[in-house]
Length: 209
Image: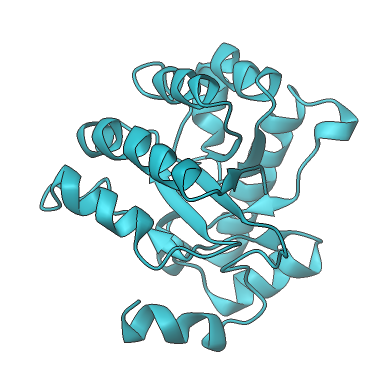
């Protein structure tokens, strides 16, 4: 872990960077779906390994592809809010940003039974103003960040480098970020199965947040 990654949890202690657990459990997360080109493949891979994960969904994609969102739920995975339009909190006024999160929650709620309602939130790009975060936290949300950012979306990162980023310094409670997006597709298809196989070989279980 480099210095910047090491210091962030201390700078922003109210965010969740790693799950507290006594179990040898790791948490796979996927941002930016659901989309048919990638999310359905991810769900097939997770089913193949009997692994659970958490999907931070863009609600406009839920609106477009409700059948894929419903499959995420029916396959036993967790879901979280990733805004309606993938907004960068640093570049948007608070009222507009917070309303976009509210719109996303409303769209998600159309497809979720009461026992499946969620207050997990991940800010797109990891960028959120403190004033926005305080409001979200005070509304009962848990802001989920990460311990392992694979950068699968980065065209300068090779599939092998993406995989290495996913597994290096692994520990119980680690939260790994992949993206079920077109941009991440090449790296994801290489790194995800290898990451799951590595984690299982090391005795980790893969669970929902």
